[in-house]
Length: 256
Image 1 (cartoon, helix red, strand yellow):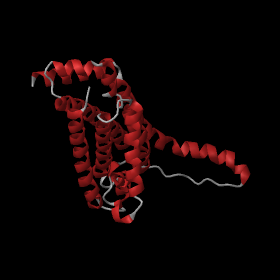
Image 2 (cartoon, rainbow, N blue to C red; image 1 turned 60 degrees about the vertical axis):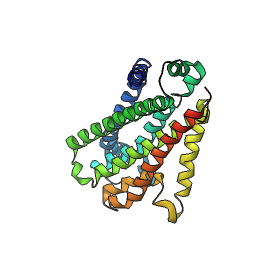
Image 3 (cartoon, rainbow, N blue to C red; image 1 turned 90 degrees about the vertical axis):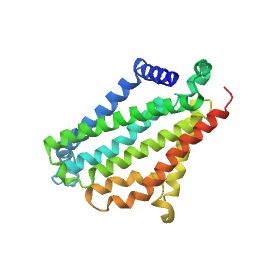
Image 4 (cartoon, helix red, strand yellow; image 1 turned 90 degrees about the horizontal axis):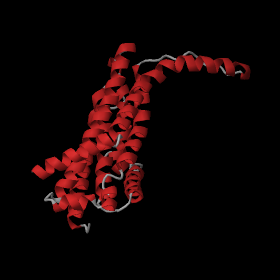
């Protein structure tokens, strides 16, 4: 247990010293501010466009902006933030393979399963902190400028996207125990997500796929109810746990 705690502390210190936590915090904070800012500036931008388009015969009508516009922007920006997160953490295992530092830790008594769990817990904690920070900033600004009450099932919608991020992280952990280079981890994670997206095209399996959670933003308008994503939520949790468990099993058999 002492070695697990020591290794976890090492991972946190490395995240702080390497600047990863600062970069991600600033990035997610920036997106949190941008969501309401873009919504607030939309009427002004449309007014500028109306002046330039007036000569072409096109008429731009006045835009009504509310909290829904800002939350729509939130769901447009969070995929970019998730991609940046995965790019930064895709080498969390592979760099240790190449440097040999993981071997040193394992020889000091830390089990391979605990090493995987410690790194996974770190990624999940950082993702949760940054994601909900972005949500909190957007929520605060929306509450100041407009009324968040217009967004129905808001927590369910943002919760679906948070869970999707956990699934992507679990894939990153799994493929980090399969490949020795970052390119392989990114290809495996991206390829699996793309395959799930393609499967989601078929009506029979759409409601089960993790990528169905990406459509949760329609909950804000009341077009559907949170229960419609229940099957996708359950399967995503199972697949995430399975990916992490599979990563532990592969790491235990891996030659380092």
